[in-house]
Length: 362
Length: 275
Image 1 (cartoon, chains in turn purple, orange):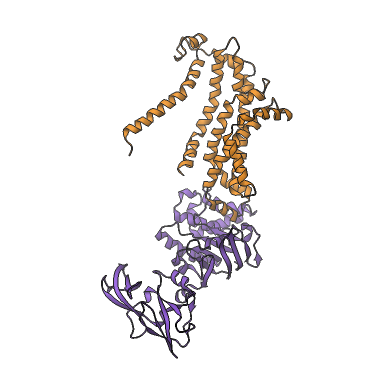
Image 2 (tube, rainbow over the protein chains, first blue to last red):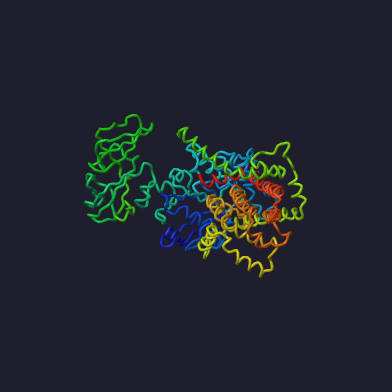
């Protein structure tokens, strides 16, 4: 169990900067998920924590130890790979003990650890099997078992569920969450799946283009995304964005309007941008609803409805141009061709300035 | 779907090729079991009760030094093979896994060895061996054959190592497995099909080689079997019974090795092709 601190970490391949000035502090026992689109540097960051890739500059501390120049095995980490990376020619037991042998551990201690891991992961009947005789889910459990027996300070997971089918992914996700509660270990988990990120994480680190876009608890990211990228990345379907301008600033409200957004008043005593500043308004599909008497409103014809059961997604051509997605609950979903008016309460609106940063509504 | 005609055509070509490849061997083996008169009288007919004779084998095995020849061939082949496989696999691992200054240049240099036949260097090799006082020893042969086999083995094994998932060695490194053990206990076991392929490609030319024993060995106790057979070929009289018997015996070890490795060999060849 240990904290993990990353300071001013940079990684370049030649002229290409993969990671830029990463600062991150992870608490003891915390489950942190690194999430972002492919190529954002999240896997590289994980490999650098593991010591498989070197840093161009910057520091990594695990516990109170600086590990910059330590080998992976000396960092007290254990990594679970997307491809499981089980040794194909060794049975499950040997897969788990192979690494331990080289640390000079006594046979009795190895047996105890394997027995513990096998019990936790329900691998007891499989200990003598080879990886090729196991299903994908079982292989993944063996890979996790191989990490557990090392009793590491920090567990590192590199997209561990992406090779599993949908049903298994959900059940393994639940198992990993349980495992985290049971072991209380610090875990860093890389995924591109935001549902995994939201469900597993104590805190999520959203990465984009080699930088950290936002760090926060799952619901903070959902309700208060720090910038346009996080707003668009977290949530499914993605948030709707509308161009707008600050038309007027009053004592207790500001008036916003855009090419496709009819002017409306937003209750706010202070708002940073000046009158005339361009802004973006973001509204999540699930917050677009029957409009109230005042506030944000947008209307247009429904072009397509996707029915998923309890929820349906209506694709609306809003204000003539923008495509809007709105979530509709229950049986009364509109059908294509209907003209609808949608609105959202003030507290569900997200405002972003021209640089894409969140504007606080005071 | 391919038509029956094209399948039949492919098989006809393959059968013809097989016949072409096997016929001379068959002729040698067949005639080794015949008396001298029958060999000359009807060389293409199989041995019958009248013509059957083991005189060739008796004479070949009774001849002086034949035991030495077989021992030398076996020793040279096995030691060379072991060195080629061990050094080749280690070099292939080093060249694919570790990027160091000059690693690309070194790989290119080694690939020249695949293209240029080692016999071009015969005279230089002869001089080198004489200066090193290794001429007329089987150590000289082993050194030459290791040099001859290494480039191709490194080339083939590198390709296979590239196909082993990188995650495996990363996992081993996180597990704290030392680099040498990663090679010997994780990578090498996965290279088995490739090693079988390289083993056959290495063994057959060494066992069959006549050239280097001819120029590098001069005494009976250092000759290999392919060279030793020459003693039965005289300027005026050739003892065909013994020549054919000795050649037939020389085929056996190669065939046995091939059978042992063939299953691995085929999976090795196709694994490279289809992935």
